[in-house]
Each structure stands twice: as structure tokens, then as C-alpha cells.
Length: 405
Ligand SMILES: C[N+](C)(C)CCCC[C@H](N)C(=O)O
Ligand SMILES: O=C(O)CCC(=O)C(=O)O
Image 1 (cartoon, rainbow, N blue to C red):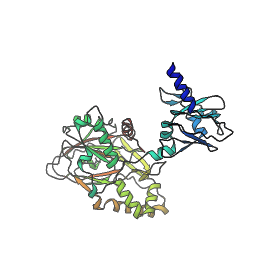
Image 2: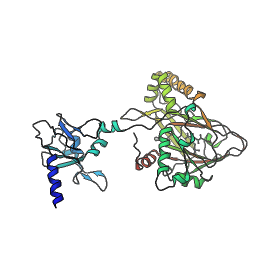
Image 3: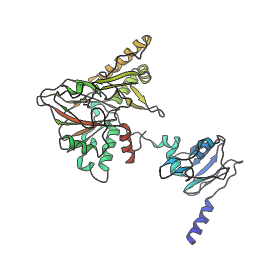
Image 4: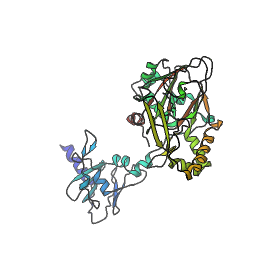
């Protein structure tokens, strides 16, 4: 009881009331925030923040987290936007150490945790997010200890192994799981520690066995396959490609090629800025056809985050291009000019990192960034793998506290 009284007394000391007719201007006390009414919005400066944040009043009203406006069980909004007045302004704003308390003209009270404001406003998000991405070339190809996690660490309940693997994928575009028994089921259970396997017409886990043409794709032959990303014929390509070489080709060949597509994109953008803009804005079709399957998509090669404009996906597959019906006659020369310059940039041998995948080493490749290919081979070779969908993979990363762009 006494404690409550003392707390209430202290709390009242921190409160600074301001009338809406004046400008908000509360002093910050200890850990409380200083707030200033700047007309259409509220500027909040918290002593723990590197800079102040501005939020509009409609934003504040819309983001009220009281039980009437927000269902905390389902984590869904309940506030009726049709009732939102665009010229709404608070009756009072009180800043206390833990939160900001706003009373609206109709008497409704909203409270905002400072961390909530920092993490959920544009200005806070833009300052906090640091991309982990590190571009590489073969000469800066990351050392195996940075990118490899043994299966036992992946299975540990502290999740540190999974975090390391996810960071490696986000940083370098790939990561390895070592010590995985070289069979399909063990590969599945190893990767399922990270994310659910995507179901597609290839099934969930797939296997390439020599030249057994299970699907109508060059992957199921022993031919060379140049650098590409998979599933350009889907409207959303798989985010992660998993490979486990169960048996390297008995008579040689079959090495894996990796190229950092974002590094190539950067070089292409520097050398051919117009081409980069063209291939970021001109969609062209891709396809996959076999009995019972006819997949088609229409999209650009470079795709960017719609808010930051940062490169988000590099879609590149010369083999799965559909007939070019989407480009009008007068734009056709532009297309071939820009596309062939990109192909030349990709095919520069200085981008190529070749490796022989070994049984026991499972590689997870970011299919939105890294191109893969393989050398031709002879004799029996066995490779299994699967894909992860982008949404499932991103969710798995966020669940472990990894912030994504
Ligand atoms: C991986 N797996 C062997 C199942 C399929 C390979 C598909 C390759 C296809 N051209 C594409 O780019 O998607
Ligand atoms: O056989 C391989 O190593 C990879 C084949 C391939 O490029 C693919 O599956 O997309």
C-alpha cells in the first residue's frame, strides 16, 4: 500500500501536462521522454534514442494498444479506421518513465511503450536496421568456420547453431551444415531444424540420380548447367535451395558453381546504369513445362524492397526464359543489349567460385541472391535437396530475433 502511494507520488512528479492549444513541451525526467507538438505531429525525444522521432496524431490514434483497439491474444487490430479523424489532436500528452500517455478529445486513453514507438515508426526502423549482408567475390569467399554449423549444434536447444546458420545465409548468401548422414531422410531432418520444407511439383525432398530424367530439366541430366537461380517460372521463387551431394560423380565432374548475384548486380549497375534500370523495370516471361505442369511468370530480373529501394532479389535463368512475347518491337534491341551485357557480366570467370560438395555437408543457398551451377559429369552421381519458401524462411529468422529488411 505504502509502496503504491510512493510510486503514485513519484509518478505524479514526472507528469507534465500540456494543453493542446499550447505547443507540447514536456521536460524529460530520468527515463521519460520529452515531447513537442510540432503542429501535425508529435516529436518524441527519449534519452536512450540517438535522435527524436516524429509521429502523426492519426498514426498515434491508429496504433493505440488498449484492449478496445487491439486484440493482444490474436495480435490483431480492432480499431475502426472509418472513425479516424485526419485532423485529430490529443487533449493531453503525458510522458512518464515507462510510457507515453495520450488522452484524446473523446476521452479515449492510449499508452505507448517507448520501445514500441522506436521499433515501429519509420524513423526508428530506418536507424535501427543494419543489413548483415556482405558481398563476396571468389577472392573474398568466406572461410568455412564462418559459414559451417555441425548438425549437433543445430539440434541444440539453445538455438545458437540455427542462429549462426541463419546469419551466415543472410550475411554471405549461403551456409553449411556438417556431419549430416548422407541420405535423403537425414538431410530432411537436419534442415527441418531450420525451416519447413517447401512442397512443389518436385515433391518435398528431391533426388537426382545419375541421368534419371524424373523431371524434364537439365538438372536431371549429366550436362553442364551455367549460373542461374531456380524457380524464375514461379511468381515467388523459393528463397532457399538445399543441396546434399550423397555421392560425387564416380568418374569425375559435377562440381558446384556459386556466384554472388548481388556482387554481380553491383558491378553491372556501375558499368551499365541504364541497363540496371531497364532490367529493374522491364518484366519478361519465364516458363517450366512438363507433362501435367505448365508454370509461367512475368517479372523483372532485379527486384527491390518497395520501401528502401535496396536490391532484394536477383532472378536470373537464361534456360527457363519463355518466348519473348512481352517486349514490343521498338524495345527489342534495348532488351537484347541490356540482357546480353548482364549475361557477359555474370559469365566473367572472375565471379566464379567452384567447389566439390561432399557427402555429409549440406549447403543452404539464398536463391534470391546466389546463382548456382554445376559442371558436367560422368558416372553415377547422387544429389538430394529441397527448397524453403521465402515466407517460412523469413518467419524462422524473425522467430529467432533476427531483424529483416
Ligand atoms: C532442384 N531440382 C533438381 C529439384 C530442380 C531443378 C530445377 C532447375 C530449374 N531449371 C529451375 O531453375 O528451377
Ligand atoms: O546437380 C547439381 O549440382 C545442381 C543442379 C541444378 O542446378 C539445380 O538443381 O538447379
